[in-house]
Amino acid sequence: MTAHLQQTRPRYYAPAPFRIQALTADLCIYGGTSGGVIAAIEAARRGLGVILLEPGTHLGGLSSGGLGMTDVGNKHVIGGLSREFYRRIGRRYGVDVEWRFEPHVAEETFDDWLAETGVQVFTGHFVSSVSKKDGRLVALTTMSGLTVTASLFIDATYEGDLMARSGVSHTIGRESNAQYDETLNGAQIHAGHQFDHPVDPYVIPGRPQSGLLPGIDPGSDYQPGQGDRRVQAYNFRMCLTRRPDLRIPFPRPEDYDASWYVLLKRYLATGWDEVFRKFDPIRNDKTDTNNHGAVSTDFIGMSHNYPEADYETRETIFQSHVTWQQGLMWTLANDPEIPGSIRTRMSQW
Image (tube, rainbow, N blue to C red; front, side, top):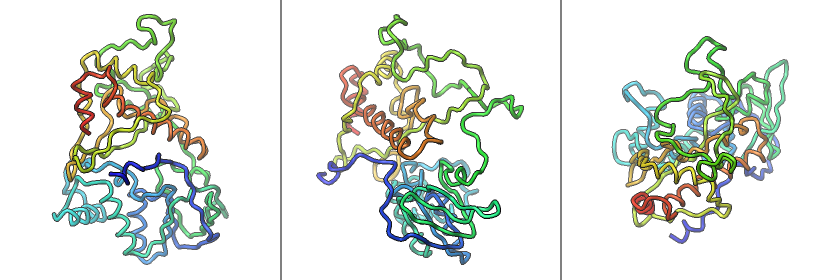
């Protein structure tokens, strides 16, 4: 327990110190997401020399970052290296195939698999600039000073930073329905993640002059299907447990601001009771816990500047999400204004 309690606050931007200044490969993959790892393995199996660069410190992206309950319908359509991944996971648990797994098992599976292939893996490398010849990408340089020259490049990141720096055209936010004569783009209101009951948005209920609570957008220009530069809300996918040998109390972040959770308390006071709806079970009495409801782990509205921000600004945005989600869990487990039935249950996780 002592080792777990001495954990440090997570970071997004932490460039790795690196002494090597130049590397060459047939293929350079930027982004150690599950797609990046699988692309590296396939290319290595085909005889290519592969360098895999990952900005963070963990490989596997969402698959090893908390999404342990695989979103899948007909499992029979999953084949190839994807199926092999789930079979390798299964062997770790003594079964043929496993679809619900612990994040660390997924990460170890990716790490071991890459080690078998001879792929050169470097973590903590954030792309800084690129070199092009005749309109073609020929090299990238990272913030750590490493330059990789390759015949082919794959951008397997979620942000698309390598493509953006290479001049690939892109769109930030939601396109309008009118742009391509479609029906499901732009601003939408659907059941499931909206407020199911009315909640007063003002600091002093019923008094607009008191101002809006944190997180409330003052805009009143909503039009169905209208485009904008907003991106999907971000959160951290959590692996939680009630096992006594693993339980650690939710920390209260140092920069905790109780005003951000007034909206949550007011919503719970209406009788909304689906806080534990997305605690999906995985192996070893743990969960894949995700956002559910109008006020949950999604830090709504706070991710819009992230895609085009520099790394330092992204770190600031990342830390605001850390504070929001740690504060949310601490509030649900400890704040006396949270209904007792929810507070008691949450404090068991």
